[in-house]
Length: 368
Image (cartoon, rainbow, N blue to C red; front, side, top):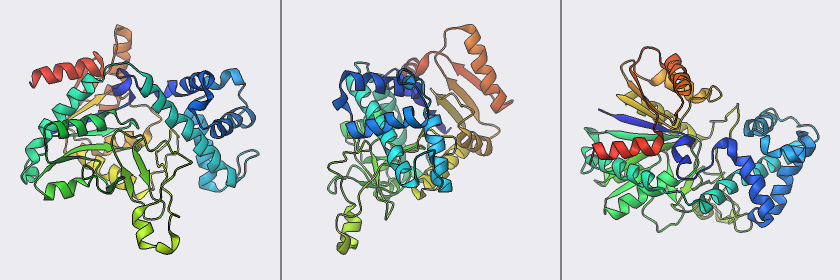
């Protein structure tokens, strides 16, 4: 049986990661506590846009929804049109400023949290052990598990990497796209197919909206990554250039600055990036091969229509569906069941309302 885990923001909440709804309230709090938490110029651009362009009062900034910020900006970029008093040359600057605030807030919240991440470590150990059967060229006959994530945070990435290192496995975290190590001598990051060809194995983690440890070259479109570093929150004073393009085009040395490529919360997600096309294609294959889909901390929102259409097209009629949520109230549980039953129809559905930590604790116990 192949199980595909689909994790959303609720997966990381018990480890201290903020939900999307809490990002802007946390940003306002952290900035008011210490403005130096952010690039002050970029935070000012972000704040000015909300007040002078979107028309929010200063005491309402923590109530703004991210989709209402990114959707009009992205539509203007797509159509080459102005947004109110902002010309095309400034729209990208505003978008980057908002992204800086969002990414930096996630970084700061995770740095200050005291919540235990043990359940994520346990889940990583479970995934690594399950995936290890693919070693020694057995990947052609065994593919028991994978994870599809809509999260930017790198809690699970880091835990899988640590599990691989701790157990001395010849393995990699496989993002299922063309990935390069940020540090040239770092052998821990390489494409999964390369590691499989060497007789090792891959632990598949497909991040549909990008990752805080990714940067991309705008010329060759390579993705660069490294663990335990949130490089996606750009250090604007010390940006690096793509080492491959610098080598291939020496006449343009240091002119290929790496950039963040996260897919922001918007109703018109742009999935034209070639790396994301590969990730989404592979996600569809993983879903199509799954005997069981387990949704952990993912609410299947109506706004996430790209994911909904992927699930609708690619899920087997015989696939079992398990939904992991955190509910105590019986009425809330009924609403959750109705929501998922409405989408998946008469497929076999089961529910766990103990949250990500409770579910993973039981999963590990049952497989110990």
